[in-house]
Length: 381
Image 1 (cartoon, rainbow, N blue to C red):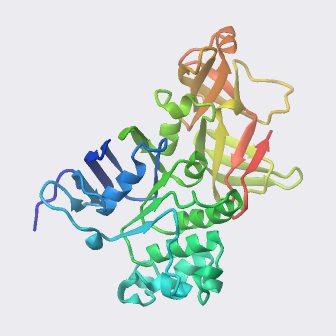
Image 2 (cartoon, rainbow, N blue to C red):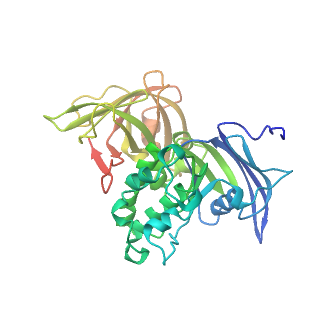
Image 3 (cartoon, rainbow, N blue to C red):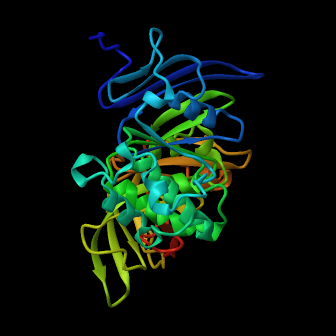
C-alpha cells in the first residue's frame, strides 16, 4: 500500500492546482474540513469553476487533491474522473429527456437500482429531503426549473459520492425559484454528512449555506477558513465592502408569545427578533450587516433598539476616505462571536474609539435565514 502523503490529511479536503488554461493561470491552494459546505467565492473569471473541474479530474493541472485522506491526485498518480467517488451538479440540470424522473435519479446509482438506507444515501431519504416523491413518473419536460435542479441534485447524491461538487447550481434560476430551492439545500446541509464544494458568485447564498469559505481572486486564493472568520477579517475585501455582514449560528432559547419575540443565543450574547423562529433548541442562522450595527461608549437608555450587546473592539480599518469598519468581539471580554460595525470617520474620532475598548453594539436589524420559508425574514428592532 502506498504511504499516505502529508497533504492527504484525514478529515480534510486538501487542494493545490497550478498551471495555465490558455491565457489564464490558476495557482490555487487551500485546506478545509471534509464536512459541511465550503463555498468558493470571488468575481467572475477568478478560477472558481476551474478549481471544481480540477477536483473532478475534468481538467488536469499539476498539484494534489485529497478527500479525507484519500488521494485523488498527486505528483505520482492521477485518478480519472470515473474513478473519483464524486457527484457533480452543474448550472443546468442536464437531465436525460427520454428518461422519467425515477430513471434519471437512478442513472448514476450503483447497479442503477434504488440504494438502501444502510448503503449510504438511501433513495427514499433523498427524494424525501428534496421533496420530489410526487415527480417520479414525470418526464423532465414537465418539470419546472427548480424541480429539474432538485432532480439533478438527487441524481448526484444517489451515486453515493464522498464529495459533492456544485457549480453555481442556482445561477440559471430566477429569484423566486432560487428562494424555492434554497430551503431544500439547507435541509440537505443539516441532514447529510457528505462534504460539498459550492461555487457561487452570490454571497447571499453562501451566507445561508456555507460553513467555510475559500475567497478567490485572479486565479489565486486570498483566504480560506470558517465563513464568519473570512467575513469579519478587515484585511479582506468582504469586510470593507458596502454589503459587509457576518453570519452567526444561533440557537432558539425562548419565545415570548405576548410580544411575538424570540430569543436566540449566539456565542457571547443573545439576540431578540420579532419571529417565532422555532422551538427552543432549534438551530438558526442570523445575518447582521455592518451598516446595522452602531456603537455606544455607555449603556444606552430610553431607546427602541432591543439588541444592545456588550462587546470589545478587536480591530478597525478605513473603508473609503470617510468611514471605518470596526471588528467587534461579543461579550465584555470580546471572546464571543464577531460582528462588524461600519461608522463614519467623524463618529469614530468623536467617540475616541480604539482597539481593546469596551463598547455597546446596538444591532438595528437582523436577517433570519428562513426554515422552509420562501424569503428571508428581516427584523428591525
